[in-house]
Image (cartoon, rainbow, N blue to C red; front, side, top):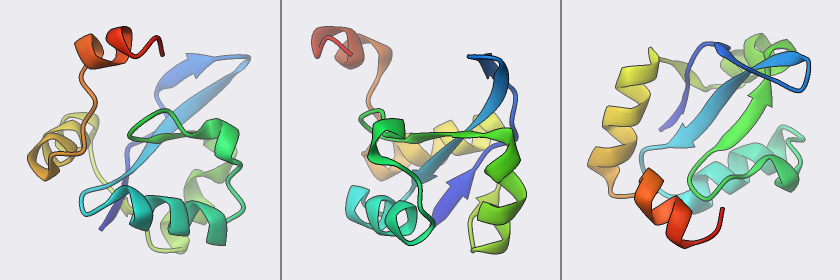
Length: 91
């Protein structure tokens, strides 16, 4: 399933949501491609998407969840890249 948290994360003059899959990175990439989300928004286990895309992505099938639920489900799926892993990858 594709999940999205509310736009709460400020950066670059806007506020961002995280878009993830709790099934596979392939599912996430396919959803992103279908909805015109550029690959430059991909960050190892999620896409950063600007607030103006939130309603559109929910309408396209992303399930809105609170941030903690998104992280919990991403971790349970085995797809989460931890902060330590992120640092070791140089991301």
